[in-house]
Length: 171
Image 1 (cartoon, rainbow, N blue to C red):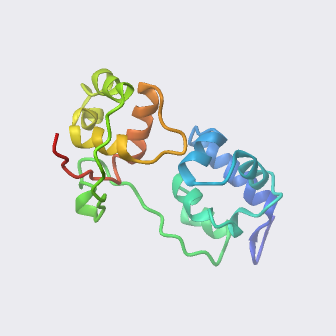
Image 2 (image 1 turned 135 degrees about the vertical axis):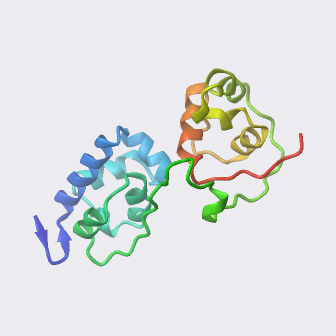
């Protein structure tokens, strides 16, 4: 039920759960992608034990779930959250939109990432996986749970490819 202060905790949580499921994400995936402290905390938010609109993680959750401005205002009317709309990949590069990734130290490229490049890199939408700069950058990024299979590396690449422009790294 909505009030002048927005949806109550239970209804806001139900909306978040609905949007998460619409995006095909598990609770674990949403926790990993947004920096939420734990899956049990997300569960408590979705069940309305805590109000998502008052969580410091609300902006990250809103962006990851691609909440509409209407959803954000329903959950927390006073919130000001910049919701990034992802342009079509051929419209602009990440660099042209102002993203810059700091230079990262050289890190060995995991065999599973190399395998992901071999398995999926032939497809135009995954072509970046074949680029050394992408592989080096992806290997150097700290992960809560480091990708362990070619499929997990592909999933990580798909999450960041439109917002990151890795620097050229010498071989």
